[in-house]
Length: 322
Image 1 (cartoon, helix red, strand yellow):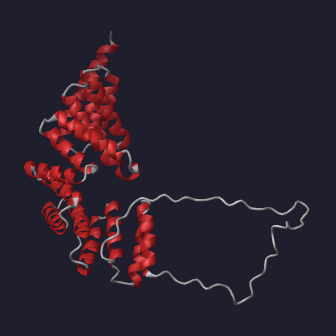
Image 2 (image 1 turned 60 degrees about the vertical axis):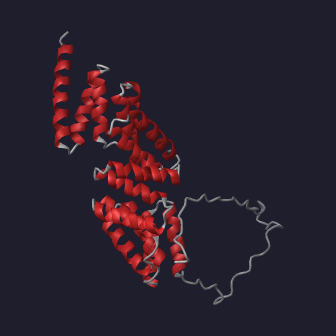
Image 3 (image 1 turned 120 degrees about the horizontal axis):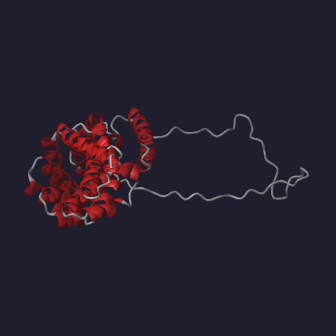
């Protein structure tokens, strides 16, 4: 592994255009175009096959472009040529993480750890995969090992803080998230998770500040990759505005969340609630309650949405009768 894992970053490819000098209209070759020598049969250049490191470079390029399947294909070719190609296992594990194929990610990252057991980046990525499949104890263990190997890895503190939050260990969560932001003030995920905790603990002003910072930072990233996360930021900020009765701001945020993630059931419900209780726009409220019922798998949310739907239908009938 060349002393350290590659830090993958988005790149911009500048493509220059080349002007072609065309031949004269009468068919006479332009002076600028010398005669082309035909290649001698048997002297064609021989293309060398890609080396494992070249294939890894190709995989990295695809990974930076969010082309997960192409990246996986190149890393797999590298591994086929060299089963001990550490960076290929790492890159493929990252791609599987982004694709949501977490078991495959865990397998690849565990294999990479066999080849290089003291790389913090490997533990961080595997911690993300364990977190995603709900194996929180294993996620905490991996994030903690990443921190032990690299005490300045802000994203490992943020990851562990997020898991502590899910486990209800809010003090530990806030400590880790504060540490993450002290190390990297541009880490949107730490603002996002700290903001969510502040919403749940009714620290609404702090929640709005954190979530606004998260949204500002997330706007700089590819929405096809983080759009659903940003939707949660808008939803949570909308809930903070809702709790403090800033109704217009709440409606705006709920709508922004829905635009980024049209399957976000709670955003529809709370938007419907504001339209029902505050705005008295019963037709809009009914549409949102119906959408909530269509999307949700939460029995409690479904029960409440059904009650509001029936109440809204009764109000609409009463309005029509006047």
